Length: 115
Image 1 (spheres, rainbow, N blue to C red):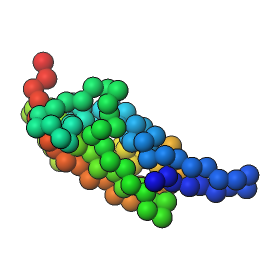
Image 2 (image 1 turned 135 degrees about the vertical axis):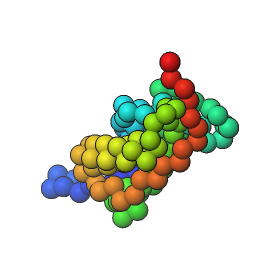
Image 3 (image 1 turned 180 degrees about the vertical axis):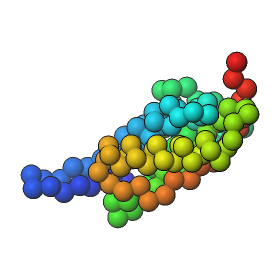
Image 4 (image 1 turned 90 degrees about the horizontal axis):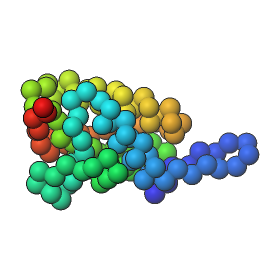
């Protein structure tokens, strides 16, 4: 599914994979996030080029919903990390797409000790 933005010159369509990649790049820059988790793997950590596999983006009536499957750093407050992730991604994705982010769901799939 694609998000559509109409302007006076025509229509802009944004594929959900583009939004997922942008959201994933933003997410791994957030404090406490080690990376995206592969949904099908028990304790899998995806590499940077596979960021979209830990993210599901849906668009309904040009409102975006994002599901993140993440691995967090050991010893951090999960609620603080989640709040920071939600705030950062919501702001940046709305700025990037021009569409509202209606909902962000975070699924913590694992914890990893960082050296």
